[in-house]
Image 1: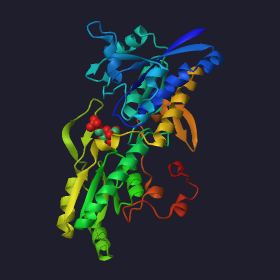
Image 2: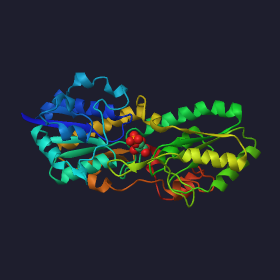
Image 3: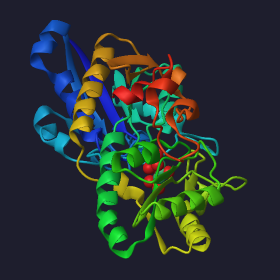
Image 4: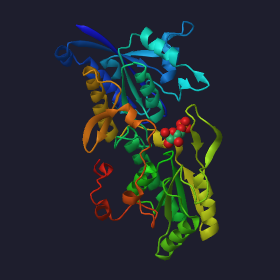
Length: 380
Ligand code: F6P
């Protein structure tokens, strides 16, 4: 029987849903019944710490166990219950313009005898996978990021669990906000897209939602808040995405510099907004940054199922020898698309159909404005 060794790695920011995907890659690849149907005997090798693992995997001076982890059904049996990634992750760019390590990665893929590589990541990690694919490596991608900003897929692992965190934390804030009659400004992650703020805000019933796709007017925010107070509200929750900015302003950064893929480290808009709101409304206002809490915790049921489906589909692609693809979820189906169609494109909130630019919130007329333009996120 033909033998095939599959490598699997997780890269970029961690999130819930990675471990379920790894578990189902392993279970599907090693399934005995499928093995005889396929006529291929698979082996699965976990690569530790994202692309970093493949940069050092064969370095004689380092312990190989630090960089790879053989995976079998017994090892991954309980993994789908846990958040984060048991393989570890890193924001490592082997194609870094100032330190190109891609040849080392290619050599190590060969030395480790990997027939195919399953890469679980967002745009950066999958961008590296795409480049390796063009160099002849058999890669398959699985989409993950709490930002849900990848093109060609309506879902990326980790998003739904992050929405649950936002909802739970805002529920907690409501009691203290109400007791003190305060305004709370809650900052979500999401980079340059507003999915976490928008769908998180819709889930928890935020009064105002501010997203990077639509620059906000601070005067308008204050007007809306005072209108709420006049109508009898005791407190308000404002949800703001880390990439949102005031009209004429720039994005807020938590520290200068960029990561190894050239991204600014965003954060700080909530503090700015809280000060502007308390000045403009005279209402006591506090800010809170949810930050990495959104990436933490056990995967919700949806992420466990999606991790399972994506993991199974990734192995299906390997069995079919259909490489250079990402598994995705579109219009209610698990399907696939070429990695090249995904990379460098950002899936943004559609202002015409998904955001109310007057209320700074989710739309209240979905069908009328949907006219012919179906957006599958509504049917997830
Ligand atoms: O892409 C996921 C994400 O959590 C973004 O929402 C956020 O801007 C970024 O990663 C934070 O990255 P780090 O964990 O490197 O601080």
